[in-house]
Amino acid sequence: VLAMYSYYNTSGSLPYFTFAGGVEADDIQYSYTSSTPAINELQQSAVNPNNGTVTSYLWIYPYAVIRQANLAIEGLKASTTLTSTVQAQLLGEAYFFRAFNYFYLVNYFGAVPLVLSSDVMETGNLPRTGTDSVWAQIISDLKAAEASLPAAYTGTLRTRVNKYAASALLARAYLYTEDWQHAITYSTEVIGAGTYSLPAPDSAFVNVSNEVILQYGTTTGYSFMGSNYRTSSSAGIPNYYLYPATANAFESGDKRRTAWVDSVISGTTIYRINKYKLATATTGNEYNVILRLAEQYLIRAEANAQLKNLDAAATDLNAVRTRAGLSNTAAATQDALLAAIAKERKLELFGEFAHRWFDLKRTGKVNEVMAAIKSNWVATAALLPIPATEIAKNKALQQNDGS
Image (cartoon, rainbow, N blue to C red; front, side, top):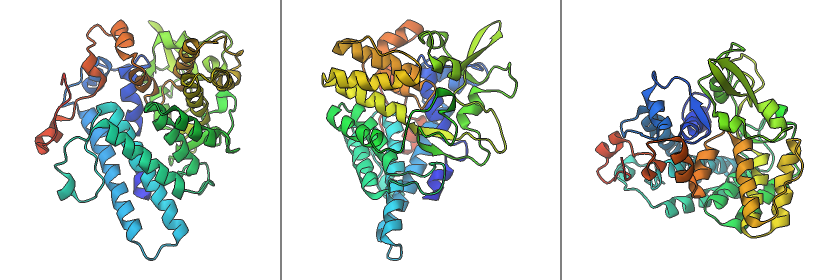
């Protein structure tokens, strides 16, 4: 189980779960497109099946962690020496990691092989499994994780998966699959736990933040996101920075604009992401924040709006706005509230784990938004190509349309 965590203590997939979707959407831009063609392809939404970043970080690494999870699940179930408490916790963590990686695979690629065994002779030639079945497995794994994991954190600084981390990802999975009532149920479990709160934006991403539901620790105390969003120079241009339209979309007085965005001039204004403050450190106070409370309020707000529970939706939306120093929303109809929640998600979750990219796709807005900023946009670009090397090894795999 510790090996699964170790994937996120090195570079691994974790930053690319964020960066790939960020540059595909209207979220973040890459500053060195000429020197890194793989990222340039993602930013231009013209990804070649031989793209090395996609192959390594969005396909091979996730499946490597899934295999580790499968090995752990099989070994833990067969164990006769572990106490039931330890066995349950480790099983819960393994189920969570399997679900977490399938969440990104299905959102980036659509249908993918559903590997539930560690036997490579059995799994090496699996065809792609339909998205409905992949989502069902994600939900099943997260339910198993939630049932097995303790509510209390193991260790310090919320770096090990607990019950509420599983509940939070389960709420997101139900939102994405449009099971509104279950999205409300599981987000309410997290919000009502009494464990989490919404601190001021400028302290939301430190590793002692009470908003954090799950973060992956590092040995140095700086995050992979921070090392790409910030530079050691106060006037430097980082690897990734915000689209101006996003930086300029905040309402007057929004504390997130002050705390989470700054800028430098380099011929033009470059808007830098300042959620994480550290570009590097040896004993810093920032980890990689995976899940946090604000998203749970926005999940419950959207699910309630979809069910026309408009007062409840507005209340949760206002919780996020209040933390940002804003007045209550003026949205009063279902359509207006859904639009307001979508905007709040963009401004709250920018630069984090491809939220904006996945939101555009799941809400049917991707073609409209992408066509406005990318002259070469085609609808089939909403899914990444299956890596050519994987299709060469597994003849049962079929390529996505347009690739």
